[in-house]
Amino acid sequence: MRLFLIRHGQTKWNVELRAQGHTDIPLDETGCQQAEQLASSLTKSYIRHIWTSDMQRALGTAQPIASITGAPLRKMTVLRERKLGVLEGKPFYELGATITNYSRQHGVPYYKVPIEGGESIEDVWNRLDEVIAELDDVVDNCAIVSHGGTTSLLLAKLVKGNIETARSFRLGNASVTVLERYEDRWLVHRVNDTSHLSKQTNLAGSVDGATR
Image 1: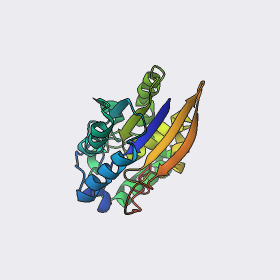
Image 2 (image 1 turned 180 degrees about the horizontal axis):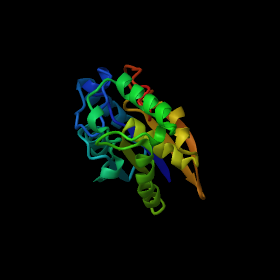
Image 3 (image 1 turned 45 degrees about the horizontal axis):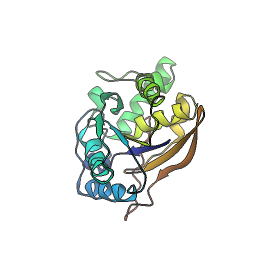
Image 4 (image 1 turned 90 degrees about the vertical axis):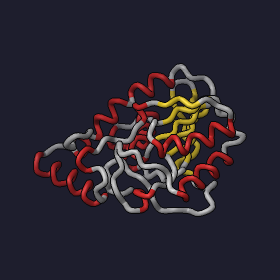
């Protein structure tokens, strides 16, 4: 069984370097093109299941894949990006500075830093246990369409890393990361593959807001 971890295509806020969180921003024109190019590259992937965040930018990326593969779409709120509360719509540097300052002042790891009206990174890490548990019952190829931070955390869980492992992953818009299950572990074939895109971008997402 192969697993395709996919980050959504580009949005206006990605370009503007603004934190999206649960704000339901759709794909921009480039993002829509990326979604089509991505779907075309998966024609022979034998994907039988598509799990997607219910946010517009993820759905807009997942729908062309469903059209090409014929696989059903399953919308899952657990796959949403981290809720950023009062910091949604703010510049990424402000998000990163808030996390860093709180961590230093209160002596807590960055992943435990709370956001007013939002979630900590650890909150997202914990909610993804539901996804891991459900994957145990899947035997056919599956695509999971989600967000930069969420996908990084999910990848870290799958490779038996810890929460800090996710920080090392930088996943670009409309990127594909491919894993294969072998007995009780996941083997990584590709990470952050964007070779299917006609124009390469540098809008790589990170779990802590340090980059996009």
